Image (tube, rainbow, N blue to C red; front, side, top):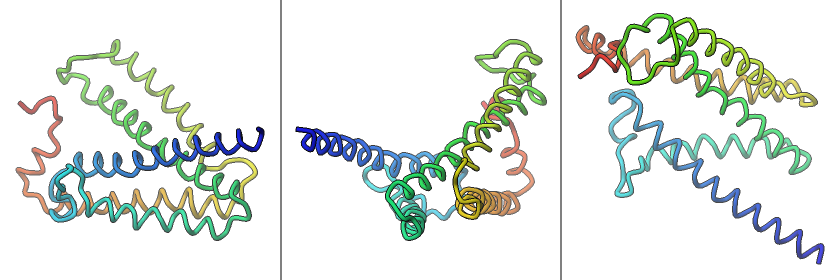
Length: 198
């Protein structure tokens, strides 16, 4: 009975992880390529198939993610070591989007608080204090997830820090290249806050 229960739990865990893998594969690429301005990536890269998914972009994501999973697999002694490495990699990366959103909100309340919008959290000062506290908490969590205790420091620097630096650097380079290619009028439109656009 115990072995049967272990197999059942393993099957349920596998099914749940497989389902989440499908979601985490399709959803990020769909969101990422639907939100970026047109012209940063080529038209063929972001072209949607009949299911509304940028198929070429999904293959690019696959070609990036699979080596990131295979390389730590080769250097791991056990499956648990591999899972710990992958979890540490995703923990640091998953905290970046909310951190960027909070930094953008801080900038909004500090410099663009006069813009009309449907919802406003308290006064300008209240908004800045609350989001500053959240940023501080997230910063501690980000450092803790990037440098977990008991892990090899060289592995952490290579995967967690190196990965973030490389991908953020690539994103910054692509966006800077896109901005340089715009006319003065297009740059003005790009820099205009969305709430001012009719």
